Amino acid sequence: QVQLVESGGGLVQAGGSLRVSCVASGHTFSRYIMAWFRQSPGKEREFVSAIKSDGRTYYANSVKGRFTISRDNAKNTVYLEMNSLKPEDTAVYYCAEGRRSDSNAYYTQSPSYDYWGQGTQVTVSS
Image 1 (cartoon, one colour):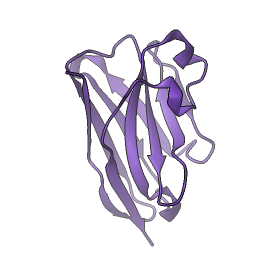
Image 2: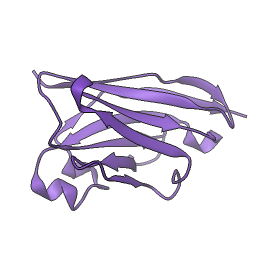
Image 3: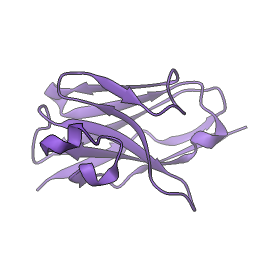
Image 4: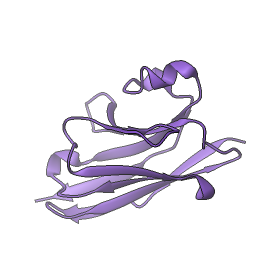
C-alpha cells in the first residue's frame, strides 16, 4: 500500500552532479518530514538531508553546501540534487518518511522514520 521508490542513481565522476528522486505511492506525504540517508559497505546508515512540511531543510555537515533537498508535493516526490560529488559520497541512497511528531525533533535518526525505499546506488569515481 505505502511505497517509496528511489531512482536516478548511477556512475558519475568526481566533481560532477547527480539528482536522485523518490516517488511515494499509496499515500501523500505533504504533511510529513522526508529525508535522505545513505549507507556504504561496512558502515552504518547515516543521515544526509531532511525537509520538513514547512519547507525547512537540514543537511549533514559532510554534504552541506553541495547537496540540495527539495520536495514537490503535487508530484509526491522528494529530490536530492548532489553537486561537487566526491568518491566518499559513494553509497546506496535511501529516502524515508516520518509521520510522528517526534520525527521532527529527531530527524537525523533512522528510528524517526516510518517508511523507507529500497535505495538507489550512487557511485562517484576519481
